[in-house]
Length: 119
Image 1 (cartoon, rainbow, N blue to C red):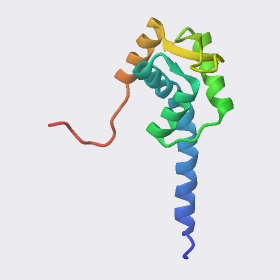
Image 2: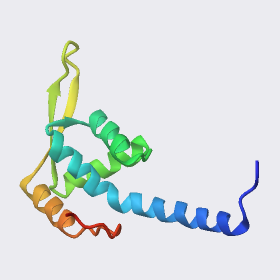
Image 3: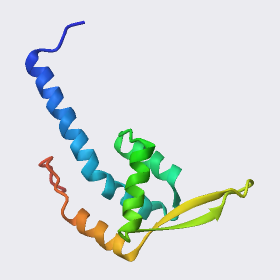
Image 4: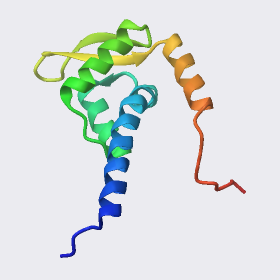
């Protein structure tokens, strides 16, 4: 197995750093999009969807911290419902009107850098 060149290691390191920064800034709109698509939705379903849609692995702590911030900001509403069969309490999340407005604004400003045009 050949070892990557110094240039390749540098590029890989920069990409990894950029992706970590990007993930932090994009986690909010990704979560809001998932909630909007599936609402009402459980936290477990949000985690699974974030992972399947993005390929990112996020910690439970990071997810809960982000969800709390979004609720405190008025973008998400949570309600407790009884789980089927067990009756245990589950938290389900829905987008608020403010959350829908925020998501629409973010999505309107996303840039496609691929250079491809629809046609």
